[in-house]
Image (cartoon, rainbow, N blue to C red):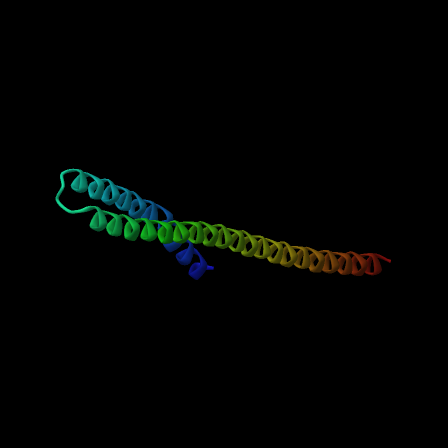
Length: 116
């Protein structure tokens, strides 16, 4: 359970880190456009950089979707394990109560026999 919690903690920060990366790529795209407008490089250079940054952005958006899906899946597994542990505890408690009831019934029967 602790390993699952540690994994959940690691995965929870990933979407925000990836969103920051997407924001950085967006700023780089804006900067690329601004540098082109100032004529610091030509049309083909600007287009090449723009395509590369857009390709990176698309790839990172895929990572974001994957990390969100992974986080959802881990949360589901975590809930499933928690529910299984609760059921196990309830079963153990029911077994203990059943055993205590059997012992009480045996003691009552012994007391009834002894009083006759």
